[in-house]
Amino acid sequence: MRLEAQGANRSTNEKKEQVLAAKRLKLAPEGVPTISMWFQNGDGTIEGSIQGSPSYPDGNMIKTSAIAGKVESGTVVETSSGSK
Figure (cartoon, rainbow, N blue to C red):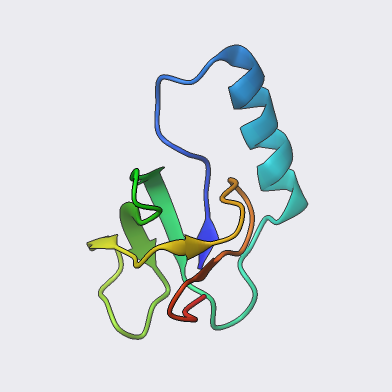
C-alpha cells in the first residue's frame, strides 16, 4: 500500500519532507492500494483511510499488520504478512 502524507500536527521541516516524499511517488503502482490520513502505532501497525483496495470500500478506515521496514509518506510499504 502507498502511504499519502501523514496526519496533522507536524513541524515545518516534517511538512516539507512530506511534500518531497509525495513528489517521489505521486501514484501507487497499479494494484497497490493507497492509505491517506494515516498514523503509525507503537506496535508498527498503520491506521488510515484506504482507497483502491479490492478488499475494502474506498474511504474505509483500516488497521494494517505491522509494517516491515521504514515507514515514510509517499512510499510503498509492505506489512510483515506480505501485503503491499
